[in-house]
Image 1 (cartoon, rainbow, N blue to C red):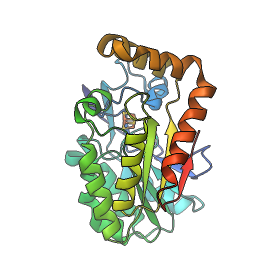
Image 2: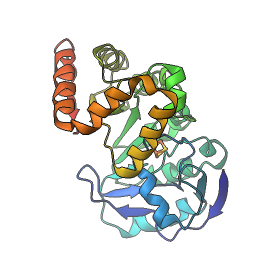
Image 3: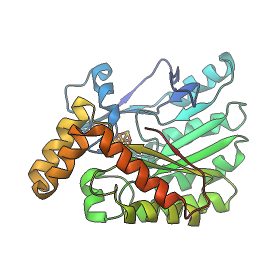
Image 4: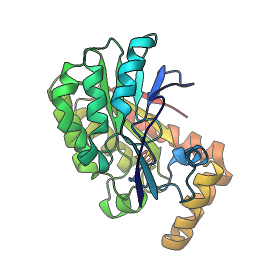
Length: 270
Ligand code: SF4
């Protein structure tokens, strides 16, 4: 893993995403190394030759730049962690995300954090001080052996739900992101049911659900993984890839079937 400290010129960047106005990514690259990572396109802009997942640039002046931009820009919702995980393991040492939250405490910019790490609990003191904030945690797989293959360096799924519960218990608005739904490992009724059950238990406000999007670079990695490690389920992946519409319809039907048993709002993002 190549890790280097860099200076950034801008840390709040306009997004094209309808749910937020600015993206704030304290790092370029992500140690979590999820097989299906959509942020792989960022490598093109990074200047790195290493494969995505094998480098992280640490934006050591992020808080200073943020301070200046908060004074200059029109207030809008900040999405913290759109192409990196703001609580990847390096954050424990570098505290770049924490330093940015300190700047956001007295701003009037709403904040939405998205992570796969229970390290977010470390910053509970600051999160509680920000007037308008929500924290979303992603969960996709309950089987730890499989989770480690798909999302190697992230927190265990159990710890992610514990983190959601802890945040909710402190009156922080939370949501669960169930995405991407991993074909075979999380697109069955048992896993979907467990997702809803755990979300209710953690008292999240809602669940966002997204199907795996087989962008060419993502699909290449996923396909290789299935061929090498799980050849016995390749037919299910062929169905997922070559019969997209039918796969989606069946997935939606399963989700709707499970959701009927729970009184929690959910939104399909696919
Ligand atoms: S945590 Fe998010 S940004 Fe990091 S590797 Fe996984 S999918 Fe990509």
